[in-house]
Image 1: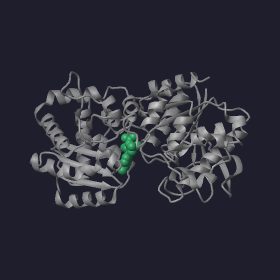
Image 2: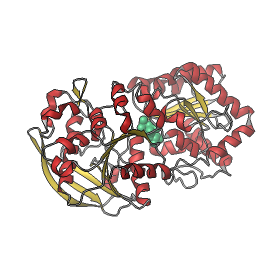
Image 3: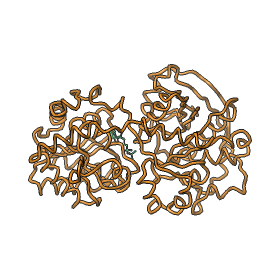
Image 4: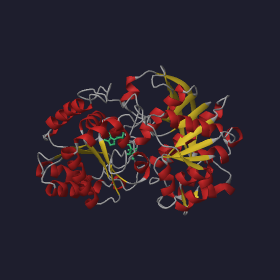
Length: 473
Ligand code: ADP
C-alpha cells in the first residue's frame, strides 16, 4: 500500500512530544512491512533541515482568504529515516524555529493543509490512504471531501485520523471561515462544533476511520474529551484504539549513544548504577538512594502542578530516603517553583527546565523509577521507554498507562499504579518505591528483568494500521 502521513511533528526532524515520536517511527515500520510510507510535514528551521540534503519536487501557489502564498515541497534525498520525507516550505509562515506557539498558528497550519491538498491534487497516481495526525491536519478529511477545488480528484481517497491528544482541538472562530478553500456550503456542519470551526471535531466527523492511541483512551473520551464527549459517542462505530509502539532502534539501552553505559537485561544492575552515578554527579544527588524522575511537559494534563507539593511531602514524610529529578518545560510559574526547590532541597531534588533529548535518554537509563501522575494520558510513551530501560514506572491508572503497566501487588505485576492524580497518592507510591528498592531485592530484580523483555515495538501496531487501511479499499 502507499500511505501518506500528514503531521506537524516527526522525530528527528521536529518533535515537541509523543506525536513526533510516533510519526517518526510508524512509517518506518510500515516501510519495513513492505509498504510505501511517506510523511509530509511543515518545513521549520530545525537542525535536521540544515544537516541534510534536499531536492525540490514540487512548487505551487494557493490562497488562504485573499492572501496568496507560494509553496515548495522538498524531499530528503537519501531516505535516511527509512521512509520518504517531504517538507512543505511556505515562506514567512512555516519556516520558523518553533513548531507551535505563534499568534498566527491558525494561518500557518491552514496554509500547510491547503498546500498538501493542492500538491496531492497534482499527483497522477494517488496514495491508497491519507493518514492525518491531530488537529493541525484535521481539516484535510473535510477539504478532500468538500472543497470545490479538491473533491473531484481526492474525495475517493480513504482518510484515517489519529487522535493523539483531544485536549487541543485547533479552534477557529467562524469569523475566519473565509480562510478555508471554497467548499460546499451545505456541509458547514461538518466543520462546526459548538458554534466554532473545530478541526479535531471535523476530522472525527469526516475521516473514514478514527483511531486513538490506546484502547482505554477511546473509552475515556466518551466521558471526558474537552467538550467532544458526545461526538466520540456518535462516531464510535468507525473508531478504534491502536496502542502506540516505541522505536526500539532509537530507544535501546544496548546501543543508545546518549547514555553513560550501555547495558542489557543481564547487566541491568551494573549499567543502571553507572548511569545513575553520572546523573547524580551532574545534579548533586546521592547515587545510593532510589532516584525517582519525571520527564514531560509541565502542564495540568501531566499533573505537573502537583510535583512541588508531592515531592516536598515525600521528602519530609519519607525522611529524605529518595531523590527526585525533573526534566520539563511548560507553565512558567511551575518552572519557577521547581527552580526554587533546587536550592530548598539541595541534595534531594533537582530539575532541568527546558527540552533535552540527550538528558531524557540518560534519565530513562539512570533513574530507578519514573513518575507519571497524569490527569489525561492518551497513550504515553515515557512509561514504555522506562520499561525498556529497566526503570519502574509509577503511573496513574488511566489511558495508555492503564493499558501498559500492571501493579507489583498483582501476580506478575511490574510497576506501581495509583488511582488519583493527588499529592496523597503520589506520596504513598513513593513510599512503596522506597520499600521495594530497600527491602524487596528479589522482587525488584525480577521486575526489572521482566519489564525489559516486554515487546512494545511497533511491529504489531504497524500491522494493525495496515489492516485498517486495507479494510477501506
Ligand atoms: P506528550 O506527547 O503528551 O507530551 P508522550 O508521553 O506521548 O507525551 O511523549 C512525550 C515524549 O516527549 C517522550 O519522548 C519524552 O521523552 C519527550 N519529552 C517530553 N518533555 C521532554 C523534555 N523536556 N526534554 C526531552 N524530552 C522530553
